[in-house]
Length: 372
Image 1 (cartoon, rainbow, N blue to C red):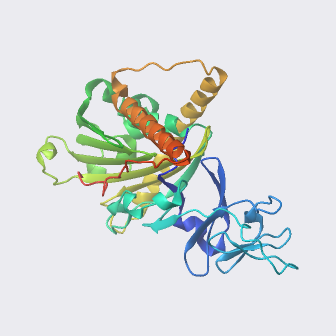
Image 2 (spheres, rainbow, N blue to C red; image 1 turned 180 degrees about the horizontal axis):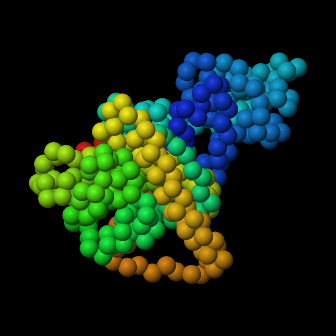
């Protein structure tokens, strides 16, 4: 069900300001996230080893946290360092600590074997730290399995029907556009799709100058999906017939949509996202408008995906059938299943007496957005 040895987004950095103790279930494990006085983010098992009380109901003390049931204090590594009224602390007394990396406003967590946690495997998104790219980061909670959200994002054809009046623009998009390239990657896929000489979709029209709102555009979408659930969508709108497919960027406007799907449980998901643009300058109302448009669009998706989850739960024997547009999502599911099977085999080999496991590391691309 889950790939453990991988980096997942646990939070935006702004979720941990002002000393907040943030409880968050990740891969069906209770996790407590907080930022200590040192400025470093700490992730501990959100369950006191003594009587099982959630630690997020406790008190932060520097980089440590104290359970406010019987006063046990745990340091940033999860080790119990104080028991009121008891001088000797058993060495095994403590809670699980998770490797954490804070980078470009994203808090990454490693849920698997800490010895295999390599920060170099984290996908790099330069747009998240580039001041030219502006947007509003946000979070949604889905009552649905994360793979259903991946399926939804993997096929641009749904834009025409689910988002006709928001992100898509018209049903024509599904009929007249086809992927010009589908690249199957070792840890995901990359799909490029063009829509030529069409009216700008509503979300884009809202942020255009009045003189440009009715002008036709050439629209390019490049979607990249990476295991364990990271989606990067690069969208470009250029004046129709301007030759943007040949590299001419004059008059073009670009968006970078970064989305992270972190499983909460097998039937619920943390969905983090931000929609960035490279053209607003000092007009922050553009970011606010795009943020509202994306929420409107995501709620259209959420309504269908959560309903889909209920249908699947009601009849576990139901098998979804594929169509041609499912090539990318089918490859992603196949790739993910292969990685999970390899991880389970390696874990079994590690536990086998007298055997040494050999694992093949699966590296993330060094940088996302390199084809923008």
